[in-house]
Structures are given as C-alpha cells and as structure tokens.
Amino acid sequence: MKKIIFLLAITLIFTACKDNNAKDNGKLNIVTTTTMLTDLVQNIGGDLVNVQGLMGSGVDPHLYKASEGDVSKLVNADIIFYSGLHLEGKLVEVLEKMESSNKTTIALADALDKKTLIGSEYFASNYDPHVWFDINYFEQFAEKTAAVLAEKDPTNAAKYEANKEAYILKLEALQNTIKQTIETLPKEKRVLVTAHDAFNYFGKAYGFEVVGLQGISTATEAGVQDVQKLATFIIDKQIKAIFIESSVPKRTIEALQASVNSKGHDVKIGGTLYSDALGTTGTVEGTYIGMFKYNVNTIVNALK
Ligand SMILES: [Zn+2]
Image (tube, rainbow, N blue to C red; front, side, top):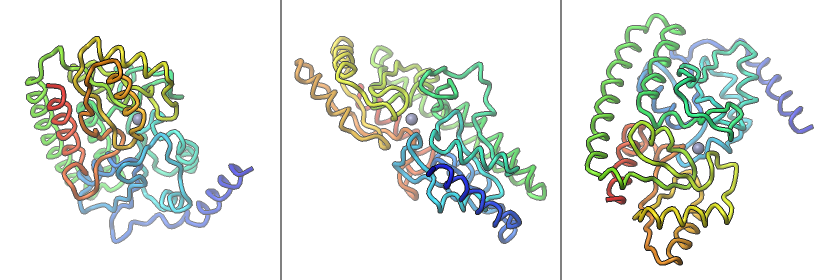
C-alpha cells in the first residue's frame, strides 16, 4: 500500500511539474545519484550546468532510498545520470518511473561493453556494479556524459567536448600515477581485504587479489563462518593489514581483526578506503581523482 501511495505521489509531482522543463538561467538542471557521478558531471558540465547530487559523502548507494525532496529534484531535472547495474538498488523503481515518463534518464554503465564486466549473482543486473574502480570505465562514463550534454544543449557542445578531453587527460595521468605507486608494492603483497566486495574491478585492472568480507552488496551481512574463513586466509597469506570502508559500518572488519589476532597473527586496520562514496565535498578526497590516489596510497603503505 505504502508503495502505491509513493508511486502515486511521484505521478502527481511529475504531472504538476511536467512543463517545468526549461533551462534554469540558461543552464541544464542535472541530478546525479552517487558522489562519483556528481564530480564527473561537474567536471564535464563546468559552469554551464547546475548539478545536484542526491547522495552525500559516506552514503551507501545500495541502501539509499529516495526522499520526497529527491523525487521533486528528479522530476524537475533536465537530465538524470545514475550509475546503473543495480548499484542504486532501492532507487531503481523511481528511476524507471522517470525513464518511462520520457525524461532523459541515463544509466552510465549501459555505455560499457557487458562482455567485459564482472558477473555477480548478488545483483539483479547479474553484474558487479562497482565499475568506477577501473579508470578506463570511468573514462567511458565521461565520454557518454559529454555526448548526452552535447545532445541536450548543442550550443555548448564544443565546450563539453573540450572539458571532457581535459578531464580524460587528468584521468590518464591518474592511471599512470597509481600504477607507479602500485609497482612499489611486491606482487605477493597485493591482496586487498575490505568490508564488502567493492574492489573487484580495481583488483582486475591493477593486479590485486581482492576479498570482501560482506559479499558484494552491503545488503547481506557477513556471518561468523565468513569471518573464520577469512581469518584463516589472512594468516595463511601473512597479510599485514585489512581495510575499513567509508560507507560501510566498521564493526565487521573489527570482528575480523579480533578473530585474526586471537589466532596469534597481528593484522592491522590499514585505514579507511572510499568505496561507494567520495570524501567530503571541498576536500581532495571529495573528488574522484583525489579519492583514487588516497585509496591507492593507503593500500600500498599499509601492505608494504
Ligand atoms: Zn558497494
């Protein structure tokens, strides 16, 4: 019943705002879901667009539900960008509703070649949605974003294209920097144990074995058996550090640390990684590029 009322509310707001699709001060109104996408669209749209992100720093996209305020932002947007592949599991219904109402609603992961993605039984999409941890995929997000902005606002197409080119150069530089940093860590030490499986694409792209305690989505809790199994793995591999994630409660990783330590191996908490959300807006880690460098430096320093 609650769901029906909610959908009805969306329909009403949508009907009320249908004609309010004009550009605000000549700028496109864009709504994004995660902080990664907010940063991306800001880089490509620059001051030609208004960007409103629904999720803030430290917010878990798997569990995020739309508030009434969010729904009215979505309804008033010229373009909605979301990540897709069921990353935003609890927003799917609202986003699909927007799409079926002919609003420009773009799942950026749809631009990726599915054959290259990592499969996952945990998501309704059947794919692991944490694709932004391979910088090549994030570059494809940038390409798609620029194309959508240019189509919607052709007058400024050349500017979006130039912004995108400049941003991709920065992403290429980022890729070189992090590869150099990772080179300083011996290959056998490249094992990343974190709270949930957000880093599979990172591992595949940059040569880490990745193990998440909580399975691939935070919607499923880790059991005692998972903790015991992973503790044994950490001791066998003589892993020096495990990692907390900014958008996942740290208790499961602390339980894992306690279990390892009780078996006589000293494993440290190597720091907090940004997984499904960036750091605070206005800080270096509040950008995709800053977040990536911070994560890689944290991982490499703790595992050395
Ligand atoms: Zn996740």
